[in-house]
Image (cartoon, rainbow over all chains, first blue to last red; front, side, top):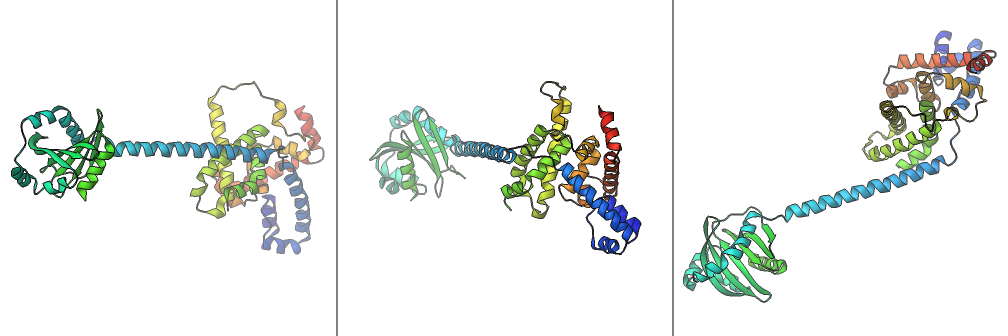
Length: 218
Length: 162
């Protein structure tokens, strides 16, 4: 290393490398330069090291703690809002479930007045979708009759269960990819897929409706 | 390393660096606080833990630039401005006086080198310039300081300021 290289690096304040040190130890002029430089650097360090304001670190710690809490609280609120949104999305009213409620409100009485199907005919009609015996394991069938529903023929079953009365709409031709629910005008409906077709269960109590759905699926 | 440990280790130097950028104590403190809050949010995404120190200095620098940009958009207000704020308490120190008279383009790399312990290459990366340009700035900064603190020059300098 030459004296010029040594002094150029020193002037830029670079940390002394092994090469630089080796040069300094065998060059008295550069060694003198280095001593002067070291004194200047000491003064420079003192000059740059402005005093830290009293309580700075504590204020910094407090500010970070406070901001973190605020940030985490905001993140919690956002997560809760997302959860509520997801819940609402999952439990939004499905169109077929809504149509089931509308049927009970407007068409059920008319359907009952049209008269019930003979038992043998009802057994044959529902055999491939939801056999009557399966329904009867849950409650007492009060009425079974055909009805037009959603552009096809469905079977309207009024079922008395220990907790009250529910209506079943058995839809042999309706295929569902996901279950649907609806909660409207005091009625609750849940529509689920069967091996063939679907069934809608409508009642005034969501818990009863869900228990009937669970029983029908087993 | 935990973020809090990193902060504890470098808080003082970050404050000093912010001071040499802003030349204002309270602004330096605000810059460090805001930068570290941003840093805390981004820290889990920092992959190169070895570069954590230079990353902290860079977020302080970015925060300073953000503050400067925001204040440039606002009409300047004289309210609350105290000329004494712009100078540290110990004005008697000759080197401090000289440093305060240096342009930011000289003081900043000096602060990074002396306070942060960064090499010319690292400073060049932080400032987005070349290593050669950084060495030139550092050399000129030292030459300017030596002129300012040299016997006779300092008095002349002080006299020029009054």
